[in-house]
Image 1: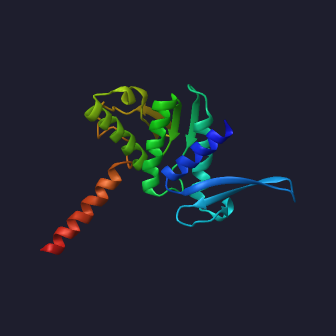
Image 2: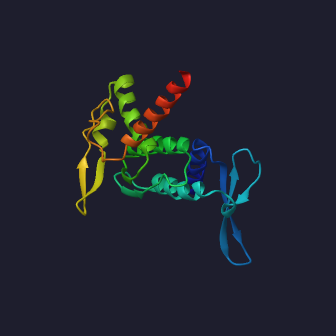
Image 3: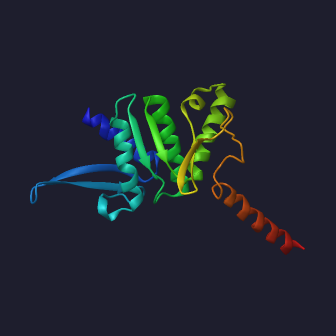
Length: 193
């Protein structure tokens, strides 16, 4: 069983493109176990503390998910912290896989549009490619917004094609990116004139 967990853990490290392998070593001097990681492209093991924070953010989540019993509920707070946007998207794919293949219920508190948009894409992709609504049936997005001193939660009006009512999200969440893109586009058009 532990060899299977180690192999699966290492496979996910490769999937996230953060490491080739993880290993532990017992230290006789202080009777502790020290973790070593072989980062992608380095060709040698280094101590975990010599690696970026992204690894220490992802590793416990991966281990928790692959060792949890089907039907377990996992709560994650801002798992996107210290992750590159590409890794955030891969993280969303990992979560979708854990929901679909391992029947885990995973509740994520996030500010990451990369994670939300990747989940929405996978919902749309399942509909388009496989005519499958099972991921849509298993996913919900709730927005939390502070209104008059109290936090209010509301379920996003998500469709099985991954879209939702664009007036539904909290003020300043998705609209900031569109506003920024508008001004960049406007400035570039003025440069052409």
